[in-house]
Image (cartoon, rainbow, N blue to C red; front, side):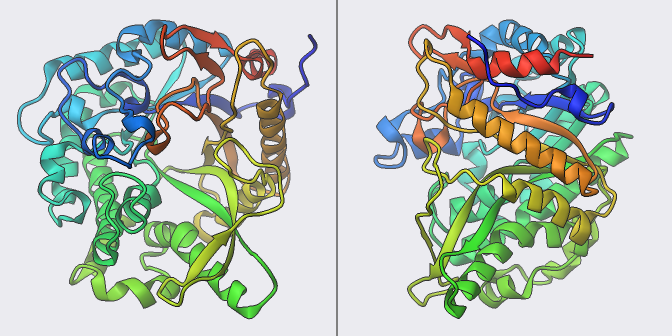
Length: 442
């Protein structure tokens, strides 16, 4: 069959790069290779947290099938492979004794990327906190920045000279707010004080990691934040105010800390009483200069006034077509964030779309046309942003393959490659082939 055409390399600037992303716990198989327990293992083992109580013990068995998976990335025509390192695989207790098998695995994996002409783009933390550190409060504990700096040094003394880029922490909003205020991700808290401290300690940990890596002479260091277009559900003043609070928490808090050295007033109204004492002092390292910023973008939210308790907003269903996650498809939001972020926070700092993709109830023998349409719309939003002056230098699709989708278990499929979770067979989808047709052009 003839696949719908997508923007190709020829449509983008000559130095524009393309890639795919995964994360360690979602694909590797955490029950193997000497990895320690994580708070996601225990969160999943607690009734009601994850669909069918599924966890990442086996996942896609990438630990043993990594060569096949890297071949898929190479054959796609990608430039970049954005992957993450598992803290608990490298340091099973979070500190102390190193699991040699864990570092050896990442050694082989990075060498495998380089042998295939791929640029290794590493993330130090993609949500799987060692249980031993979770027992001590995890991201709520003020010692986390020190623990994270030690982990960073352990990893980068071994691997740092072969990495193309590094971001310390994936999606600070998810690590802190979603996990400590809304309770949807591990550790599953719903506590405003815990959320406030986690939000700050995540940024402080980011800054300490950047300091460590700069001290080792490393370059091309960045941050990866997630964004959702905040839209008022109606034109009432209360909906406008609710939307502004949502936007400040989700889209402004972390960028403001990283680039302006302060937090938005709309967020401080609810959180300042719960932040650590003298938190302002940490902006000296939180604002450490970066070489790039990554934006993860999927959808929008429509907001109205909530129940009166801060932050006093409530999401309502919108009218647009939705993904398997129930997320509205709103590519205009990607264009907005690429242009707005450059104008408001980052100036000429290089930007990358570090995650963008669609969950779809795929059948391996049928073309995933909905995903093709989603990718087409968002790649064209990138082109418009470049035309409007955004310093966008790359687009990285989520995800290489179907994987463990956190609280949704193995039910939601984001992959360009279909995975049979019984046999673990990989089968490239129509979206993979359509992208390859345009990405392999040189």
